[in-house]
Length: 430
Image 1 (cartoon, rainbow, N blue to C red):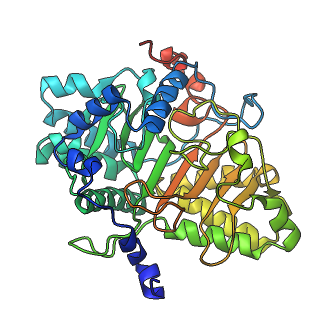
Image 2 (cartoon, rainbow, N blue to C red):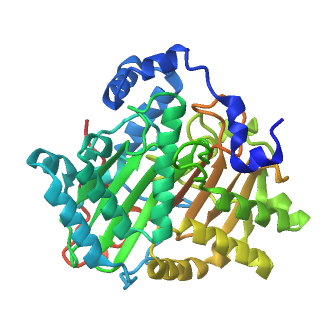
């Protein structure tokens, strides 16, 4: 059994290192990202993931509506406002990146502001939708310019978190000797619209365990949806040793659940087991998303409220909720985060907290906070590259959505003079 120090450092994952001599890895080690994706799409293996991919493509054909709790989009939840985004610096960084690109790269990276490709991000290591430029295939100067755009957009702590997620992805690639598929820069970047201080535009940054959708209009930003994960969630060797993410979200969620009274815990815990037999019949589990409901291609999902109301919690518990939400809003610069937090707190009377799994100190678990204006999910996963069949605390998936049409800045677009609801509302026709 791993010691407490091992558990704290993330060293527990070592007992689940895979056999790299099996065909899955010997084949992967010979492929680059494009060969890997092509083989996956043509062979249909593994069947469960290929089936999920085909389902995702069907979901992409649906006109965009947004995630709701009951199938109805609630109007008038979002407004244009000054959020203090450093738009001049962001535009300068974007233009510096564009100046680095060749004509062919410019063609690849540039999309209409209303392109449906806003919606085709995905978080597996498979390059399921190859768009824009891939950062491990460009020059160091171009890569540095792309990172400068990300740094100019996010808060310092949010940028550090994103870089940590990418470094952990590189660490995983080294662990399974497949760094041509998974590495620190195996991420795609594309821009929507032209960088502007006055007109709307944005960008998508996506790859294994890090996906960010950023919509910008003047000094306002919508960083939603986003996905951040890690397997394992700590680097314990090499130049980035000590890098660790998602542990704060984990600790705060567990503290909140443990602090509830027995009756509130009973109502919050919608399933006692992380893979309860009742889940499959209710569409509450699949092999890839596991307990997540709002991941890639789930733009229109109906997610009913579950659990207990935050407004029924005691003040110390509501403060823990605020702590969780601050972690999930970490990508936003400080002023924008304050504005978004104020909006989220206005809805504590309709914000629900739910839980799946046990809530002892060593238990793996899932939780969700959900209101009309935000959904955040946290999930401990079983192994994908590591061999743990049961969820563990060293493989974590997190995400944030803005329901009721808020993702991708869609709810704001009709409010912007001159903007129309373009063909983003309908998916790509294949």
